[in-house]
Length: 246
Image (cartoon, rainbow, N blue to C red; front, side):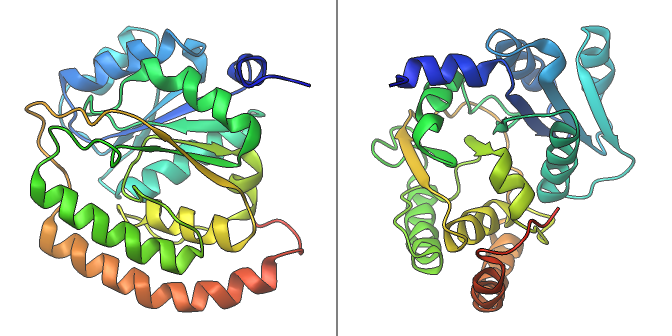
């Protein structure tokens, strides 16, 4: 039997990382270097989502691959750009990390080890929120409760962007959300298609970074997502057992 550690080492040779970035400044340079210490540098994909700072240039100077959106299209769109590139190059799956430094790349081996028994692995900060602002904790618990009901499985941290997503999920799950709601969409649709979702506990890291989430606008998007999820349930039931959607 293959152990989790052995499985993780096997995946490390074929996994890609996707890091959406929008004016992330110095932080994304540290994320990129830390990720390259765990995966091959040419499999670390930074998706520049219309940045106006000099981080994309500096990343290229350091030998990183930067996929460019000419204008800001949203985190969901940046993820999809990274997913398409990774799949076209034979990825077994992707690790997604935020560019602001809240996700420590040193945890990548833990995600890969857990991926041996799951199709999606979510890094959950809700076991010990620590320095997470109390309002963020409350909103996260509420949205995670709602997403869990829509997905039909318990998910304690639906808003965590630190994840492993297997290639089978990326090929099968049709994404339509272009902003932060894409992360909830992935969970709902993959669960409804019968993919296995697992969580691993990880620390909440907060520094002086500025959140890109707009409370009012993104809350409205979330409630629209709830409405769309009713349609997704029917669509996923039709897709389940059927062909792939690219």
